[in-house]
Figure (cartoon, rainbow, N blue to C red):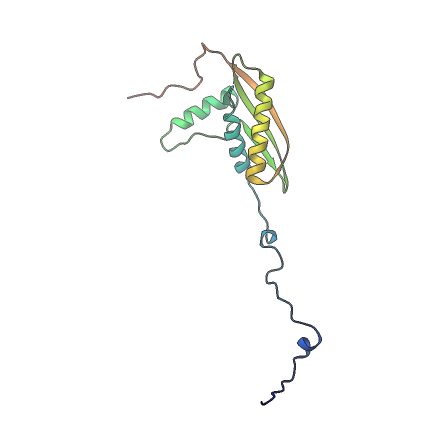
Length: 154
């Protein structure tokens, strides 16, 4: 047998080779994710509307303008109506304006809205929801017609 002698690399002779990690750590920690206020507002608006007893979102005036805007061809229903979010790097705060159905417990509806909104926003965004302020701007009576105008047929 012939013995081959190799001059060992100085680095490998004194210490074993380590696996080289490229990119500097866990891939989930590379970079930054920012979430726009509008994204949180949409999530919160959808979650609030899912609660039984919430008739509509927003003030009477914003609902009227929104209904007109929704009727315009190409327009879409605004799920952010009645929702305002302030989004930071790790936390968010929300203000919601709702109209409740007559006969429901406003405090129960508000509690359910808070729970549903917080769960949805935290699950979908990873942000901590520090507060959800709810303003009840109206009660929808059974005999009242909706503020939204009927579509005109020509």
